[in-house]
Image (tube, one colour):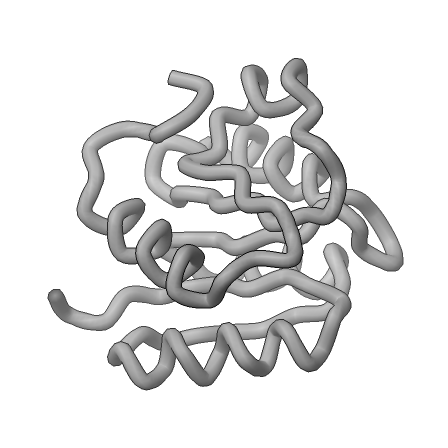
Length: 128
């Protein structure tokens, strides 16, 4: 598989860096942001293939970013994986249809598998 553009949005800098390193080693072009505002700006400039999003961010929640994808008419093109310590909000998951919802703490192998599957998949694992 050729490298894909992946946006990581998480305020935990150590986790974000670890994800960045793992994805970069797999040949992906990774951008990391620690706030929703910077991620939204990036979405206006670039269209990633995949967005990994934490729900708890300092300036907004990850669901806001999912809504931005819908408003920018990118939700069919940009896959999203949600990462959170929170239990899934079934209504938000049903509305935004992320490819996967991975609860923290998680095994990095589990996340990498979900990333690769999402980049190869024709539809979402959940919320479909």
